[in-house]
Image 1 (tube, rainbow, N blue to C red):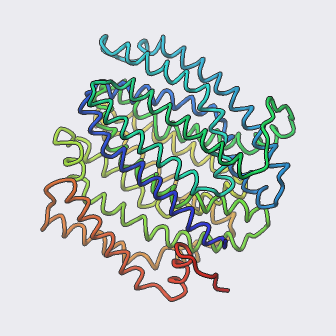
Image 2 (spheres, rainbow, N blue to C red):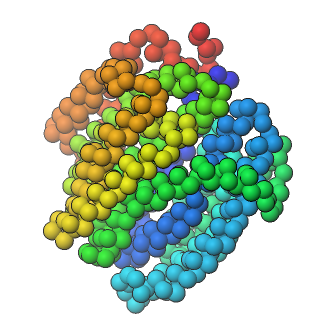
Image 3 (tube, one colour):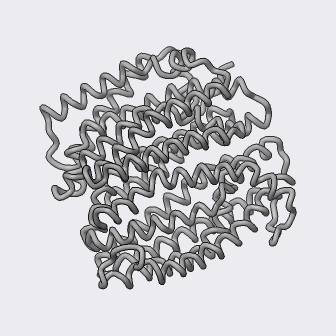
Length: 503
């Protein structure tokens, strides 16, 4: 299978995976809040935020696992692949035990850090206990998800995850309708997650020649992994502060109810992140293979064409969400969430910049460039926290939204793009000309069409919102495709149709 066809196949399956996940969470979110209440859901969000911080103990090993499995598999070096997988598995067993102990600790002392109503203390403790027990299995068995992705078998990973998401949605509905609470929902979610990873283990065991060696103790392999993963870890640490610390600040300075209100705006930008990474993840593993083979010119071509097509598909979604933010949120969550509209629109703005950066920045990791991006992220996080803490009392939940957007636009975007282009040996003028300029007219069309649609055909429910956005999106993509050269059209056909490569 050609590389461009493999990328198209992986993107298609990963897109189906993410669409299913987003669609299910989209409809479950207001349903769960309605049945458990804002306070309980706020407790759940803060508990999961704390739990998410322990995910940083991954130390970036998952990124290293995926990169090196892909790189060595491209070289047909099965021995090195086995070393990387076994070292990762041993590491994750130890981390699973560590995380479990830490979560048990928090199950006891959580209420000392946050303002939790007495009636909800037991719920908070139970959530941490469930997370602690599941960590013993979730961490080590998740090794095989990284293994699958490194082998570029995104279609199998997507198929399993879609099944898990559907089962989780069905179980959530059934449990809430039968009177169960948030703790029971979380238990089912964790069980299904473990089962999904177990299925991936069975698949990779059948398809690939490897064996589990535990404990794996070759220090040379661990050193090799950590020379890359350490910088990924620090990057993830900064990213976690950037995208998660808002919940803790809002919960402390305002209220847990305000956490739920801000979560609506944050979830919208999370959906955009999902879309962005859906298109950008499969090319990253292909780029890792290219790096191992020294195919640098192919990497540049991948960035030019990938950015052009990716931003043409992604930025219209951003523009439509910005214009339709009010009816989207009101019909989705209810009139009581009007305070979420302005923060959501503010956060959406920075994606107009980030939406053109995914492939160029992901090439840095594929090429092993992980130090300089840390300094950029550090500047973004510092500016974000300072702005949020400075204005939180005066502006409420608008402060973290503004802090995030300003720091990303003024610091994150320009500096990341600069080092990406330097390492790829691409001039900005060439990058703009070949990847951005040709798409500008379609962006103008989408914005104007959305504004006109909203003014003259204001939607009356959430389904009307989605239909109007879908119509605009389909028309814009059709016009964009019609405007492409024959060579560009052939590229797109090769991405998603089984056609012979054109040389």
